[in-house]
Image 1 (cartoon, chains in turn blue, brown):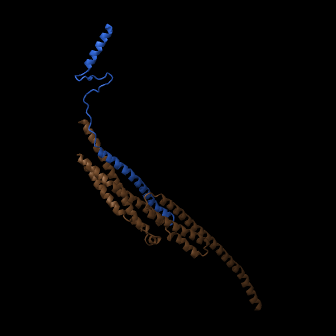
Image 2 (spheres, one colour):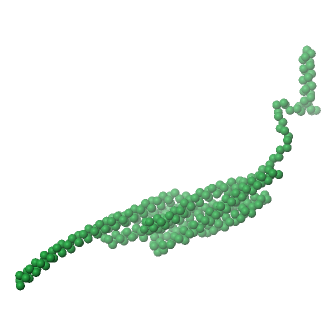
Image 3 (spheres, helix red, strand yellow):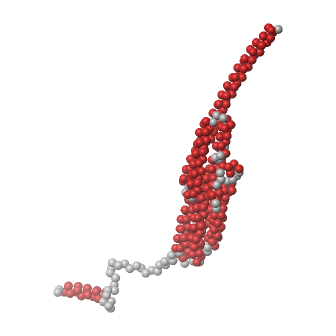
Length: 91
Length: 247
């Protein structure tokens, strides 16, 4: 074993021993893993879902109701028109 | 003396001949005029029938596409229109053969008073279509009521101010109840009216028309209430989010 190889082996051993904890497992993270900064971030409490869902459900029902009321309004206009139709046709 | 009498007779005869001829001419003219009048009256009557047959076809189409009609009401109106169409078609054939002015006049009056297509049938059927649509809307709103109350209760349990939503809901319930009460049996009542009912009382449809319009007002008000409740719940949510973010 040359002197260079001996030095390199010793250096590697030192590095590996430095990376191990008392139980022999590595304590250092691999260089490729990025640790998320532990800066305090306030997470907003989520808004209550129930009222929002209920509002959407009500909106849907109103949409259905609107179609019926639109039909109704059209028919009411026809009823108003019926009087003049009767007069025009001698009824 | 004889000569005078003969001369006088000749004068009378000569004078009478043009008069008789004129009288005969007048009778011929009168007959021609009567025939021409009958033809004109007949055409007017047939035209009246034709516009009513067109109206019946329109009513059939309207009944067919009405979305909220009950099966029973749809069938009843289809039968009424079919019966009227058959009667008017038969009457048209009869009028085409009417030579007696009195009979023709009576048949022409029958087009109007025995069928009342424009004065009764058209508004009658549209009132039934409207009333059935209102019944459908009442059902939808009644089905929505538990959802609305539940949403308000949940918002209240979360400490939200639901004063406005609850007021809107109370109003909605009152409007829906009033609509249901006024709409009750309008269609069946209206469908029971015949041309004879209309001839006896030209205002026979007025109560139904008034009720249908009042119910429509209630339904639109209830719809506004439902929308206000939904908006209020959404506003509560937005206020909650804003408050949390600002904390």
